Amino acid sequence: MSEVNDPWGGGLEMLFERLELATQSARRGTRGIAVLAVAVHERGNPSPLPESMWDAVQQQAIARIRRVVRRIDTVVILRPAEFLVLLERPEEGSFAVHAADEVVTALRTRYLVDGQHHSLVASVGISAYPGDGDDVDILIRCADSALEAAKAAGGDIFGFYSGKMNEAATRRIEIERGLTEAISRNEFHLCYQPQIDTADGSLAGVEALLRWRSPKLGMVSPGEFIPILESTGGIRKVGDWVLNEACQRAAGWHREGRPIKVGVNVSARQLTEDDFARTVDRALEKSGLPPQLLELELTESVLVGNVGATKATLEGLRKRGIRVAVDDFGTGNASLAYVRQFPMDTLKIDRQFVRGLPVDAENAAISAAIIALGRSLRLRVVAEGVENEAEEEFLHSLSCTIVQGFLHARPMTAEQLAEWRKKRPWA
Ligand code: C2E
Ligand code: MG
Ligand code: MG
Image 1 (cartoon, protein in one colour):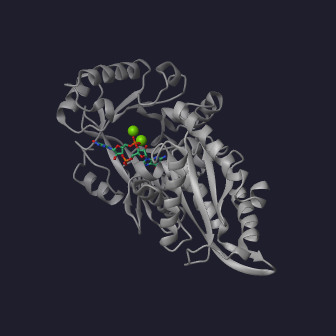
Image 2: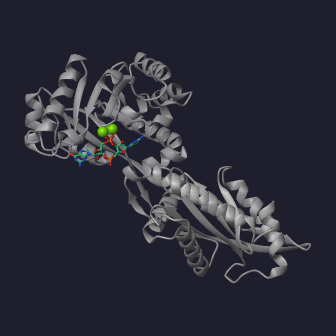
Image 3: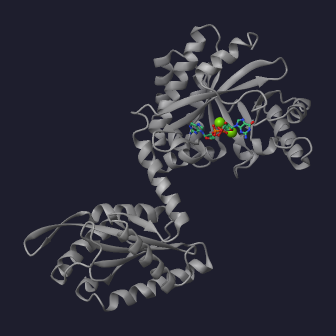
């Protein structure tokens, strides 16, 4: 590797060239770049390694860095036993975080120097375009000063140049780590939010909503941790847990003689599993819940993709008697014509279109159109996020009688729901 034998030569120049090209194309379009400054040093000692170690450490460190970054990424020597890595298209910093995390892990090891092993660690500083600067010098300087801060903090860690990104990255990593053990440590529970039929005040169903109490972070909202579970693939296992838990609960209500339909949210990653239908079958079998009491909620984005396979899966589920709802209707980019080709039972109008009814004229027009569409397709239409009487009255006047929202009830635990129902024997 030329840059290893010639640490002060072409390597850095090459990086400058690549970085210059990358910043140019990033300026023109949407491509991002991130720079990692990496140093290998003794644990707790940020000073440079003795010269006798440079060659051997550099060779081993570069080989390890290359194993964790991609082919399009560039690695060069910055100073003895210090490197710069240019990450192209790091996708809003999240690849940069992973790469930095993996570099720190990969370089925390024993290095063979003149037949002797030395345990060393690494520190990494990260800067990103355009947040930290839009030219090569500035990006390198930012990464370098983030590296100094990481070393000064004891090393064996990575850090962003900007404090805000540091916080966001640290939180994401903490959430990701916390989620891996959350099922086995019993940190998840489900809340249930009633759906009311305003025609007669009856309970039309409940939606199961996942809650996570992390011992370290406290309550974390699903809006924050579900996208992380989706990106790591963890949603399959957690989604399975949700499905089984909701079916067990609903089967209990059924056995008590007060059956309620339960809605369960399903992510794209779950639906595209080969054996998703079998997973659902097993949850129904194990709990004894009649399939008619289960409704799977899918967002439009879940339906975009392999149309044929998705349709077949949904048809299979509906043949068993399971219901299908389209969640957050109107918020995705799918056209109406697109969505209606899928077999479904329920349309859920997103809260964004319910807000401010009927004063908000645009929302009034949109929700009226969605309700009319739902009726023409003979679908059950549920309005989400109904918070006040004006919204409910307007929806009622359009013959949308099923509402879910804080006006009637917030999501509550199964125990709270039992109490809530006791006070409403008619519901
Ligand atoms: P969603 O499926 O559309 O769920 C409705 C969300 O609206 C819930 O938020 C609920 O608490 C909230 N909501 C209900 N009524 C009102 C209201 O009157 N006003 C306001 N402002 N909000 C209201 P939550 O529980 O935070 O869940 C957020 C999203 O996270 C859900 O949106 C769903 O997409 C996802 N999610 C929750 N549980 C699961 C799950 O088990 N699996 C999957 N894949 N996603 C889930
Ligand atoms: Mg939902
Ligand atoms: Mg929704």
